[in-house]
Length: 168
Image (cartoon, rainbow, N blue to C red; front, side, top):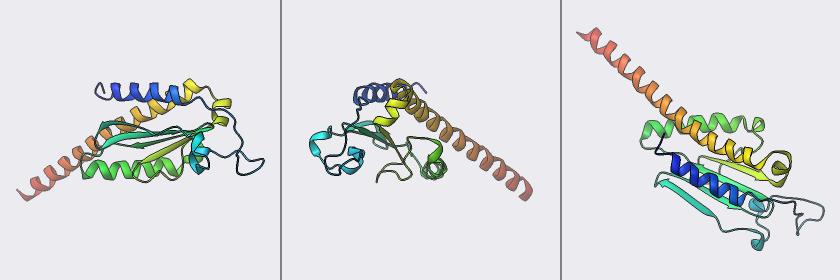
């Protein structure tokens, strides 16, 4: 868990710096407030995207605008088993996106999961709590995938031992 700490600290500081969102009505559609990071109507309202990488297989993208922030994550997938576990776990979470206010149902291309934070979220919730949730979420995802991988390997070893024992 210590190797992930600097990565998570960098994400925490970057999110705290970019999560200064405010209400800003759309300049294209009258009386509508749309997340600029999703629609990208006005490039002058967008900050440059920030890519934070732990390894070449594990990274996140932070895209911020004046009224919204999109946080996309690629979870580490060192082997085929981790790829399968990550895909199934993220599918499980995104199917329950309505229970998590900020999780998008469909991730950005090339990422496993995306979160969308709007100015309405920062008005209703504390910014520090949103950032804490994201960092804790990343810690828990990493931990859960490691636990599931150990469980699968342990069960596979037990099955192989039992099968080879029955052949003797």
